[in-house]
Image 1 (tube, rainbow, N blue to C red):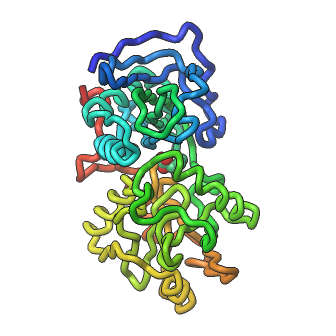
Image 2: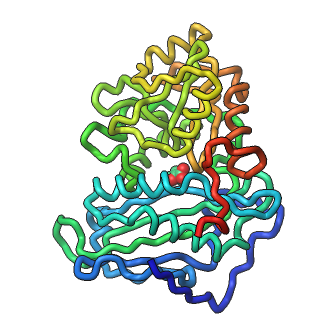
Image 3: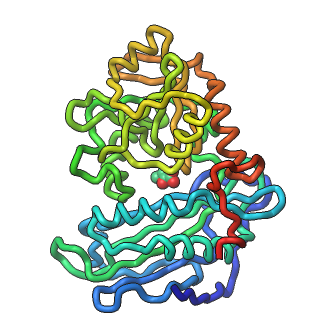
Amino acid sequence: MKITIEEAKTKKMKPQAGTPLGFGKYFTDHMFVREWTIEDGWKDGKIVPYGPIEMDPASMVLHYAQETFEGMKAYRAKDGRILLFRPEMNARRFINSNRRICMSEVPEADFVEAVRALVEYEQDWVPNEEGTSLYIRPFMFASEAAVGVHPAASYKFVIILSPVGAYYPEGVNPVKIYVEDEYVRATKGGTGFTKCGGNYAASIAAQVKAEKMGYTQVLWLDGVERKYVEEVGTMNVMFKIDGEIFTAPCDGTVLPGVTRDSIITMLKDWGYTVKEEHLAIDDLMDAAKNGKLEEAFGTGTAAVISPIGELNYKGEIATINDFKTGDLTQRLYDTLTGIQWGNIEDPYGWVHDITKMK
Ligand code: COI
């Protein structure tokens, strides 16, 4: 893939050191854009000044939501190296999402090279304060101007970058989670395993409801029986019950998280039994009552490892580990972030120095 570069004439002020970055509020000077048409396939990639994208009001994404996205991060190591974490996993998941939504696929090597090239070009934007990173948001949408439901004849693949801190205002402190028993996120045969905008649009009503009640996010139950725990709004979820780790299997309704996969690998290496099984919410609440629910945490690129301190299911409250971050949760957080920021040895070959990826 050829990539052309058009440099921005004016550059933005970068957030000053010490400014709380929050999440997804600042965007860098450039973005990556590549177009696909049914006649010509993929065109050359372009790094261009960050700015509005001109769209026809009939662009199909605006009507039928043919859109997919990814979330990943670039980290600045203490020695100045800029590291990507398992970018090929995001590339493969993007392909799977696009297949389900009937969009053309971005070849894995092109996806990784586009991310690498843009991050390298914008490397001054990778923040260096503790806990900060450059969030990478690749996305793709149907740009064909047409009314009528069918796969579009043209798409745009775009990547934007945002220097970020913690996703939750709580930082790495425990969050309160509301178990959603009315709305559903996914059912088998649907799009639950993809990262498509529609999944998140459908989740907002539950999120608003939970926030009104003082909860950070919702824990989704399965869409058929509303009985088994699946995932939390923007992260996969794991429970330590009587020494074993439970998490929902990736069998169609759960997002196959890159952080989820990494944590499972680490846990198994540390000798833990990890059960990728359907866990009933009633069993989970019973485990909490009987003192067997030792720890609970979410895993995700944006959320990293987020301890869960409280669950509310139909008004019944389970406080987990006295609302404190558990030892295993902390160890996972320290090890994962240590690898991601290049502070500890990476035994898995997960991190890639962008200068060595060409
Ligand atoms: C991520 O973890 O990267 C996500 O995409 C979650 C969210 C910000 C939608």
